[in-house]
Every structure is written in C-alpha cells, then in structure tokens.
Amino acid sequence: MGEAEKNLKKQIERASLLDARLGAVCIEDPALGGLIRELCRQVRRTDSLMLSSGVAAACAGCAKTRGSCCFREMGESYGFLQLFVNRLLGAELPPKSDFSGSCFFVGEKGCRLKVRHSFCLNYFCPDLTTTLGDETLLDIQRQVGKQLLAGWELERALSRFFTSHSIPEHL
Image (cartoon, rainbow, N blue to C red; front, side, top):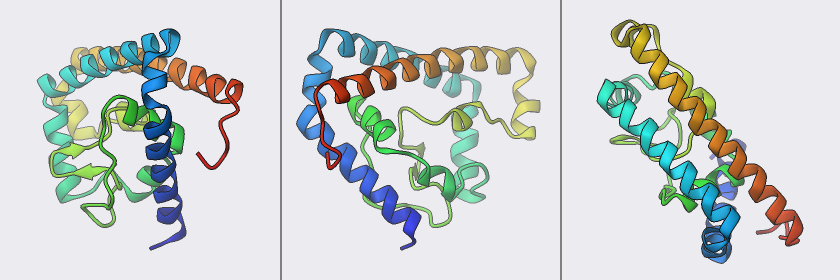
C-alpha cells in the first residue's frame, strides 16, 4: 500500500469517527441540518439527471472496464471533510478498493460517494459529450453548479462549527 492510499485510509477513519461522534449533532443543528438537507436535495437532482441522461450508466461501465477519468489519484485526493459530508448524507465508505488502479470509491455500480469533486461531476469525455448533446450537457452542468455551491456552503459551515467547538485534530 502506497503512502497516498495510507493517507486516504486515515482520512476515511477520521471521517467515520467524526460521523460516529458528531454526525447526529450536525444533522440536528438547525443551521447545519438545513444545509445538509439542501445538499441532499441537490445531490438527488444531479443524480436524477445523470441517471435519466445515461451518464451514470456510461461512466459506471467505463470505470469498470477502462478506468478512464475515475483514476486512482482522484480518489486519493479526498480529505476527511468531504468524506464526513458523504457520511452525513448516508454514503458508505469502503474499506478497500474494488478495482486496483482506479479511484478508491468506484464500485460495481459506479461511484459510491454521494458528494464528489467538481472534476468528477463536470468532466464529460468526448464520446459522452457527443452522445448527450449541448442542451442536455448544459442542463446537467447547471444542476451540478447548484450542487457544488450547496456542498461548498456546508463545508464552510462545518469548518466554522469545528473551529467554534474546538474539535481536536485527531477526530
């Protein structure tokens, strides 16, 4: 196991520990809970567009066979805060990768994360771009923008929450 994968596993452990200790507190907090619900709503809308347009199926198939944009380093770039947000939205973080050489979070049905990096949501390979057409691609990109904004607002609020509650680094 390389250094980057060891670091990712530490980030997953930290996110899981935070979820166990503070997940319910964050969800019940009026301000944070509202931001969590809004992000969840935006994720559902994005996922719906990705499913109905065929993007989800195409990307899942490609990730299993070619790896393409779901490359190993993409998964290794997730930090504890993004993973904690995924836990808040109910994502299960895997103990190990299903496909060596691919993103740690790619599973049989595609990405296991609910909240993904901007790259993961905004990159469309040339084949997919052609298949989707300009109008569908623009609709997806507009929705992705709403999801990314909701995620940024939640991460910013969580960072302030952690600072104001003196959450130790080991959590």
